[in-house]
Image (cartoon, rainbow, N blue to C red; front, side, top):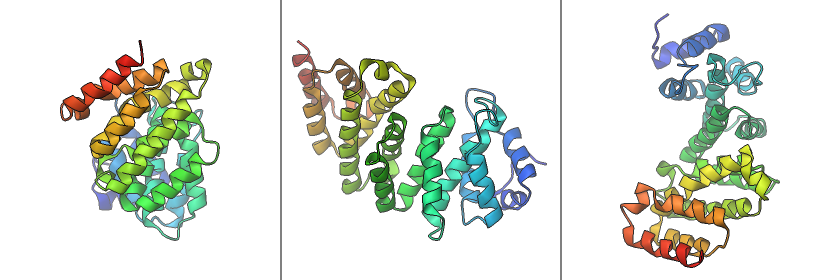
Length: 269
């Protein structure tokens, strides 16, 4: 079998799950520092485009592989990465799909021990957002109103920090609002939780996502930053300072960044 298949060949290969798994794992580039993102995107798009019942069942099974069945940084890890992203496409494109089941699988992936699976969950939500912001917003609100884990909150802000969907002011405004809620949730964590893996993951997400939201709607975005900068929480200040250093803000809005930086400095003394 060739190392690179076109869409039709990949679709035909899906008739044999074992052959498909062999192709995907063999070309995953795992173990290694960077998986085959291009193949993952192609496979997710092709397999998630109105799959038959058998393929859908395979995707659901792969998406829920445990760390024992698909250990981190092995080629087996590639299967849940592909499957979770593909389920995002199913959620976006197949009106008759079992939405509750798919959403539950993606939500579980958002808090998975494997970081690549967590990334796939955010990307699945991005695919949904590209198709329907209303559907993405409804999904985000369901998660955020139902005692979300820090990992789930991180998945939501990562999903929203997606420039292709932020061209609409309504979407950007919602992203800013959710970013503020996530920042407040982080500020409410105790010191031990902040230093845990879950806390660090949320912090790292906030350190870049806020700048994406602000760049999409700078007038309102910098007003949010100035208000958040008045916090006396040192970790919150570090998160905001990290966003101000991002080129998307520092290069395009140097004066506004200086203004927010001055608020950070003034409230630190």
